[in-house]
Image (tube, rainbow, N blue to C red; front, side, top):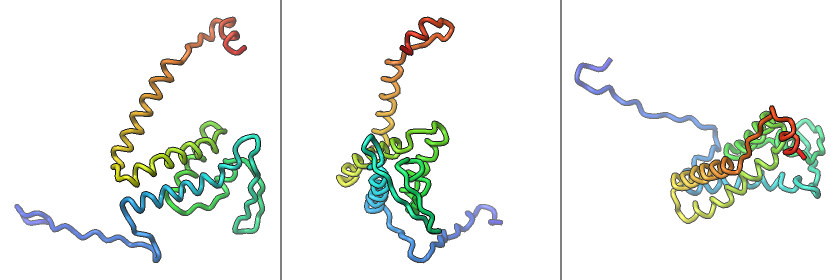
Length: 164
C-alpha cells in the first residue's frame, strides 16, 4: 500500500508478442489493414451476380468445396489478419441475422474502405473519416424514414394492394 500522501508507483506496461508479430502502427498499418480487407473482398467479388463464378477451396485436411455462395466461402476462408477477419465476422453476423446478403455486406464494406484509402493517404484524420461515416449514416436513415410507407395490416385490401 502506498504511504499516505504519496502516489503509488506506476508499473511499466509489458506486452508479450509471438515471434514475427507485426508491431507497426499509424498510417502504414491502417493502409495495410485496408489492403488485407480488399484482398478478401476481391476473393468473393466474382461470386456475385448472374455470371458469378464458383470457387474451389481446399482446406488443411484436403477437403474440397466448390461454391459460389459468399457465406460458405467466408466460412471456409482461413483469414488470420485481424482487420480482414472482421469482414468474416460481418458476413457471419449477416448470415445469422438475415440468412442472406453476406457477399453484398462484405463488398459494401470493401467499397467503403476503398473510398477511405485515398483520404488516409492524404493524411485525413481517422476521427474525421468516422465522423463523416456517422453523418452519412444519419442522413441515410433520415431519408429512409422519409420514404417509408406505413402499412396497416388490419386493412386487408390496402395491404394486398401494396403486394401487387
